[in-house]
Image 1 (cartoon, rainbow, N blue to C red):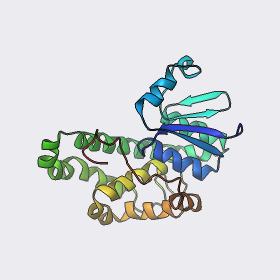
Image 2: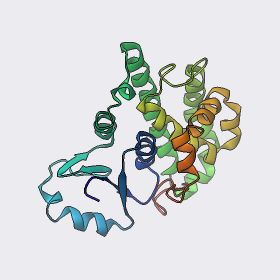
Image 3: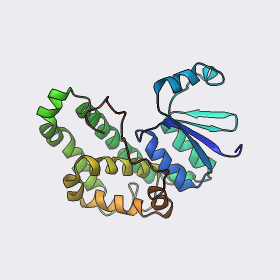
Image 4: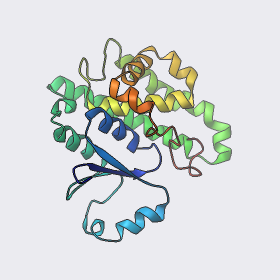
Length: 221
């Protein structure tokens, strides 16, 4: 339908999954276009109208004739679209806490990607030690930061909570023992998954259980 947003991303979880939660939470009518094969996306990019868009990338949102690219920009655009600018942080303190959490999540993803892009031989030999020395301390730091909070920025949910939840989902799937040992992370995960919009989405056929990352390109996911 013309009044629906179009959300485009690969047919995996990846960077698109927190935005799927976000769209569901905001209640914005949308359709999703999932690209399964690289040629589907790159063939589309080579033709109008996308070949005229300088910043073309996945994920994207198409709103009427407007195209918005880059995942960070999508959180901002969609918050304003839904009249929920509070999701960007309502106070300086919330905005600072949001930025700090986002920084830790980016650090976590960076080292996690390093781990799961090792060669098969290296992954088998180094996985446990690498997780313990390079990843676990960031998880523990994040867990401590969440102590006494409902959401990452305090009492109010912001867009970083959607990103945090997907990190928690990844940790839960990758190392359930560590996930279960981090009480504040687990509490945040429980709070988020029980939001009515999110609970309904997780139980629906729209939810992507996996893969987290492109099959064949990573040691896990």
